[in-house]
Each structure stands twice: as structure tokens, then as C-alpha cells.
Image (cartoon, rainbow, N blue to C red; front, side, top):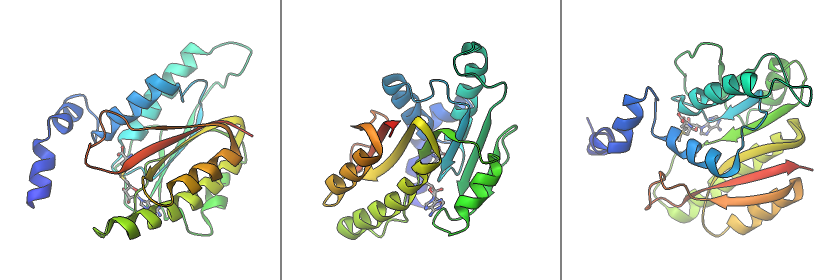
Length: 211
Ligand SMILES: C[S@@+](CC[C@H](N)C(=O)[O-])C[C@H]1O[C@@H](n2cnc3c(N)ncnc32)[C@H](O)[C@@H]1O
């Protein structure tokens, strides 16, 4: 086992995630973001990009199941949920959640997603997708922003007022990307969860109310 992987496995948050049945400590980041921004409010159709090993899918399923009970009114209710996870890596099955092994930048991905949701608009898009880091902060940041730009294009699949969460890296191109997001959402917030490694330059952008 590599030193990095040993450190990871000894991490108290990783152990806590495992104790609670989550596949990764990232689950805690999403719970924190949820507490702050209530992303999952009335979210039944959810797309999760960069989902392996699957802890955000587990959280999404929990929240969507709670929503079926919670929002059982005439305003905006669906009697079922649909969650799709996409990753270049294989994701072990999660009951009632669909996963596809695919690169989100593949030109066919939009059609695949549309087909899965029967052409219906989505309530929420999550992306925790990260490039494979080379160690060069400058080029890694630029590559991550480039990936985020491709992912942002999927916001067209959201319903009006839909929500999007994207992981970005702080650095030179961050402001430019923030403004791109502002063009698509009425409100954009940035947030670094406590559960995110302090040394990492990752930060999350939350797009609320799609234009
Ligand atoms: C930090 S992990 C996601 C962890 C996940 N949110 C969880 O809670 O289990 C980032 C993932 O992004 C995926 N990824 C990176 N680029 C991608 C791409 N172009 N298409 C699909 N997945 C991608 C990686 O394979 C990796 O599994």
C-alpha cells in the first residue's frame, strides 16, 4: 500500500464515513453544503458527474427518498426519483441508482443523459469531478477549469430555477469561471466545506436558480 493511501485510510473522517456506511469522506462535504444551501430541496431528478466511488450518490439517494415523503404536495412533487452517476471509473452498484462508465466530455454523453431521464429536465446537477493532478498547480488548475467549463454546459439540462454544484480549483482562471457561471444562474456562491482538506485548493461553486 502506498504512503498516500495508508494516510488516507488512517484519516479519522475516512473512518467515520466508513462507519456510517459511506464510500468516501466526500459525503461529509456534500452534507455540509446541503446544510448551508439546501440544494436538495424538491430534488428528484439528479445527475452526479464524477461519482466514483459513490458517496455523493448515496447521499443523493437518501435526500431524494426523504423528499418523496417531505414534499408530498401539489406544488412540485414527483412520485419517484431518478439518480444517474457518471464516471470514467466503474462504480459498484447502489440499489435504485443508475451508473454509467463514461467520460463526461465524450460528445455522446448529453444524449445518453437525456435518454436516461426520458428527456425530462433535471432538478439538480452535482459535479465532484477532478482531473488527474500532475502536481503542477498552474496547469492542474487550468485543466480543472477547462473540465468545469465542459460540465457547466450541462446546465442546459436543468429545469428553470434548477441548481448546480461544481468543484473547481482556486487559481488564475477561477474568477473567469465564476463569471461564466453567473451568466447561467441568478445566484452563484463559493464555499469551502470544513471537511475539505485545508491544503487543497478545491472549492465548490453553487449555482442557484438557473436562468
Ligand atoms: C473526488 S472523486 C469523486 C468522489 C465522489 N463524489 C464520491 O463522493 O464518491 C472525482 C472523480 O471524478 C472522476 N472524473 C474525472 N474526470 C472525469 C470525466 N471527464 N468524466 C467522468 N468522470 C470524471 C474521476 O474518475 C473520479 O472518480
